[in-house]
Image (cartoon, rainbow, N blue to C red; front, side):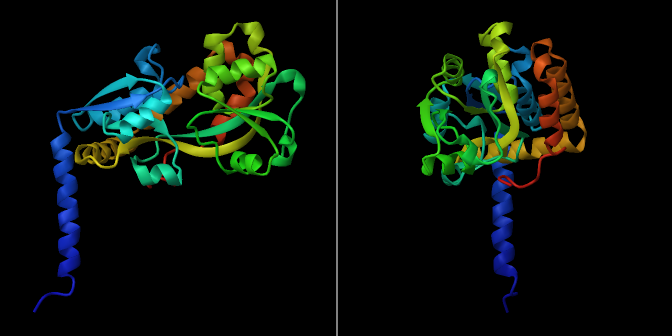
Length: 287
């Protein structure tokens, strides 16, 4: 007589063995990750390559896997990971369309988009109706969330799409757009690298979040090796969380941001946004 649980037990066992096999196959290998310029998280010119670069390297290192980052435009990183030329791409947020095409890692770090605007415009908002009639700069292939999508669908804002975040900041300064949704930390990192201090004084942001989500690695869905790399990364990230290294990296990163003299004008807003984030990432891939 066949035990009634035997079929399910066999299925689960085969699945776990395949995951273990994929993980063992990736040990001692190098994972290739396509990424773009996203300071201070991912920055080829920064020491250690930025916070998320360091976190990703350390998580993989616990599993005896080396990491090679290849810096390309964001749209190319997405396309080359989809086609299997890269094992993964860093970093992205979950969307239904992306979940159909890619495998997502466990969340790495929370982010929020806020609306940058010219300081002398006196802009503030509590609902998307407050955006009515304004021009909003957007960057190609980014996911800005339901509020922005709804405002565009209702005709409340006029979207202006370009391929570069820097170009959107330049448009904002020139008065060609009125709003630009962006991670505030990345926004001021880009501004400080591109413009002088007097120009920075002309830009600010409303601290009301447009979108709250998480940064993830996205892996090629059709590659067994990439699947193994995803499992290895999640295991490595869990190790860093359990041994306290994750929180050490986060604390050091956030302290460095708040002590940066360039962003001293924006410290209150940045500190408030940092305090809003959860302490540790959740277990599920796309919470």
